[in-house]
Image 1 (cartoon, rainbow, N blue to C red):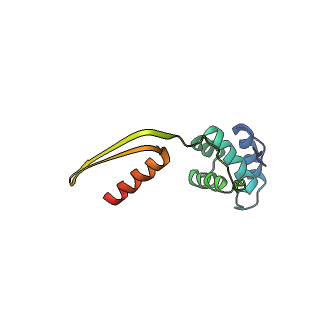
Image 2: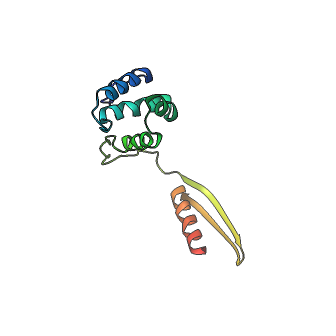
Image 3: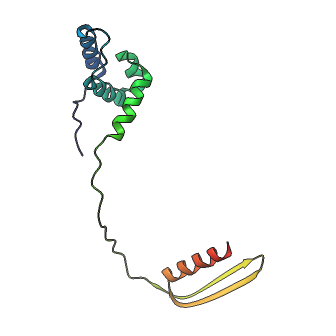
Length: 130
């Protein structure tokens, strides 16, 4: 599991950082990405409403940042090949399949057929009926 680039910050610590930034910013400078990342981390722990109110940021902007942060998480490389090893297919000593529909009845008796064959046969019969 990868660690976040932004260390975990409490709501109180985040409030202090936002206030320091508000005191030192010039004009109407946008909130830096580093502070947004902190706000997203706080919102994940404390909840969106509590974080947006406590940090005095717009709820919708924080929600969009949270959604964007989820999409940019690094994805693991796809698995190229997975081998599934199961038991040998078992054959059924005897099996009877009876179907009844609007057009009539059908009875199929199978001897020493595998479960895979029965599944394929059932699928094909169902597909042809539709």
